[in-house]
Image (cartoon, rainbow, N blue to C red; front, side, top):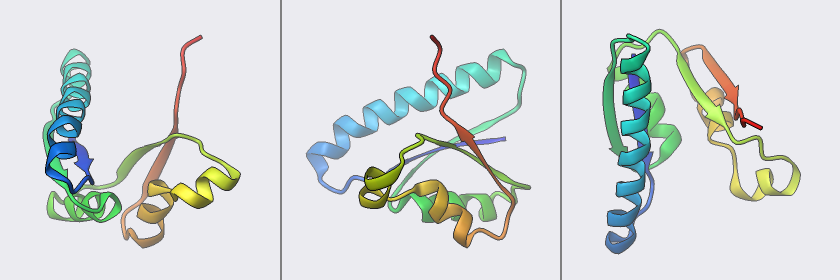
Amino acid sequence: MCLLSVDSRRARSILLSATSVIKDTLALAEARAAAAGVTYEARLAYGNVADAIRETAVNRACDAIVLGSRGLTGFKRLMIGSISNAVTAKSLLPVLIVKRFLLA
């Protein structure tokens, strides 16, 4: 399994702080995969998120892409866009979109 986190920010000052949060998120995913006994490779990429996901999946010869969705709807989805839609629209691989799960 390939765990991928993508930093799309361009400005250097923003990049340093954003990358720290992204690395922390990736470290958490690594810890969960390790605890579950899943073999994984963690990667940090920069640039366009949808393109980086598709390129990584192809370059790593993945069987499928699994990604999360924040579940935005209506105007927010229209204005912000949807990474999951962008990946699904252009991917030649199967894509599984997992809705965000919140614990009560």
